[in-house]
Length: 306
Image 1 (cartoon, rainbow, N blue to C red):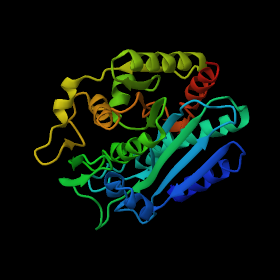
Image 2 (cartoon, rainbow, N blue to C red):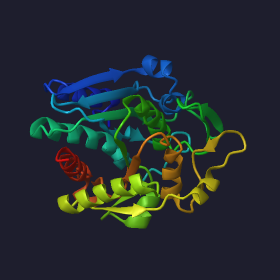
Image 3 (cartoon, one colour):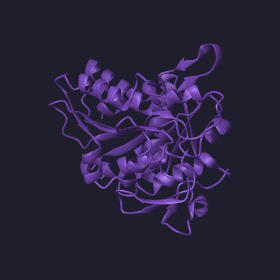
């Protein structure tokens, strides 16, 4: 994590931007503040490394359709912030930028394969660190959407950076949006290390998107399993002091995390991939797996055929 900083991710994105079909823009703290991304900024407050917000766009000349937008969680190291994690295995929290790395991996594949599909990639990148400026449990912040958030646990930070990126998405008028995040230990408990957790709303458009992603995962041997999102789970996210709390307690933790994100995605078709159990391995095989790059690349290649 001392090498793969937010700026390192930004430089990797800029290198991808040298391909003729890919454009790259990188925003820093001042630009993010001007956008009103108060939730994203709150996570970055305790970090010495400056945040980066990365915008990638792959658009072949022939592509005229609305873009598919990929949003990757880019926490380059996660201490948990003031709600600090236990020391054992904290070193693995350098993998908390696996969603961001997946977006970069997909764009590398797009650069090489050149499919006829329009894709935007967004990466909010920061460390989550505890210092005197860090956000505290009980603080209330205002997201880019205008919704206020009571931060009950600073270790539920991924959703706080993603929600502002998911609001930024709206300017692209997307065909669909997929966010990718090592979001919850609860997803590991639910699905182990075999399937990525897939969450979408339940209607015709979202069912179709879920089916596309599940089929692509099976084709690529990078499988996902659909989990529920229901209004009843939103009850757990009620706050006395803000529009929404950032955690809903232990029951159904991966579902309430997805329900939090869902609050910021109601203007487009959206799916959430929780890759906490599939993005890396521990122990003797410690390292990143590269998932879900095969799933997402296959998904986009199939979209290009339509």
